[in-house]
Amino acid sequence: MVLDTIQSTGNENLAPSAVKTYIIYNKTRYDLTPEEFSEYQRIVGKATQVGLSKISPRASVKVREKQISDVLEKAGETGRKEILRRRGVRYQVK
Image (tube, rainbow, N blue to C red; front, side):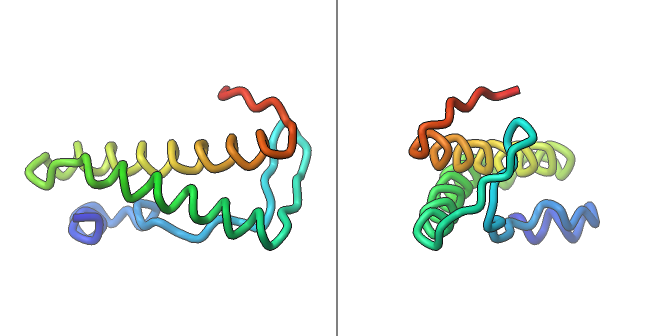
């Protein structure tokens, strides 16, 4: 479904990708330990998988494009929030 949507729209930003080895929040850069990076990737990957499973393949291409983009954004937000929470950083969604 994701590949079909990318091919239909040309929007390659819809492809899930690996997370970065750092998080920038409130103008502060948090470099992740290898363990944090691994956990961050796991959290984002799982949130992406769950979110994508809820998208109907019968939806229009435009609707799927928006929904996939929203899932990827929310999954990243979930991962950042959890990793920073574990560091004791109070994370607020903007």
